[in-house]
Length: 391
Image 1 (cartoon, rainbow, N blue to C red):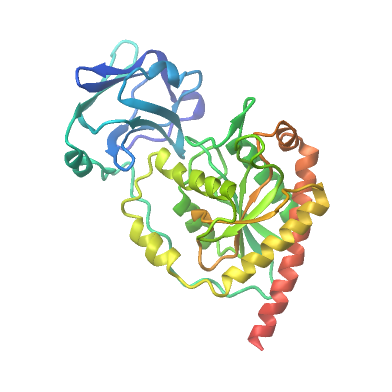
Image 2: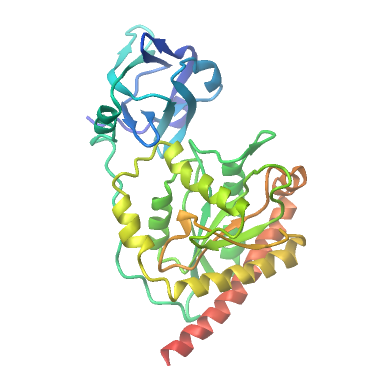
């Protein structure tokens, strides 16, 4: 009988005491102590090597991952919500260690459970062959992006559908500074921006995530296409080395980055899927065939014009932006071939002043108004061009 999703107040919790990751002979052992038993699955992924443990809605509040990680062959550990109802633990492996055993034992008197995982060294080829997410009834595979024909380009006779993509989420918090995470700040701003756009009556707004969960890059594009998006805005507030980047900026897609900082950001964003334990093995053909190789002769100029109006609108609303406000980089989240798409960096959390802005509701309100003004300008010009093309 399938296990129903638990209420937040009743969900299981990982306990610091009794949990540990440590060397065991030539392999690695992981002991996970839970307040109650939950459905789970364990598997490894390659390139880079990592162990993934999926658990049915487990809280990690109060757990210090660094204190659990004591194995020489484990170089990193992340925990968090991965998708609604499911949590994920990812261990970065410095050696090819395949899964030897995984079992859960439950204490009949207390209801507490312990998951015992054992990894053993194997040759590289064997590790690669044994890696991959397993099929499971509790975890159906995500279907590939809908390749149906896009809806007709807007001509100003209906509200525009705008998809807002608050970056990161769940197991991937993004940049973190002074108790704030990029994932939380961008979700807050996306909700506020949705209200501003919807209140105007000129936009229908869809968010790629409504809560603190991880959404893979390919799924964010799929959500936008399923919504029939007229425009896609991905929202971020990263952190780079002090002095390397400062000020709001807007990015459009290019295989050649406009500067080093843009290249670093694109690499970081795209690597987030791997670090969160996403298996991209079956996505290569989809990305290459459906996204990267499709013609963007019409969409790319529209994205460029959208970026230009956003720069003007944001600058008018909040003043100073990055000295070069429009950048280019190979962000995978911008690769939808049929949707004008931009990525907006509201600011950099590595700058104390910009972090102060990002947590200020009044500043965020002005930034949202700047985006609304820009979308109004772009939508009108885009509709006029569309009507001319149909004549």
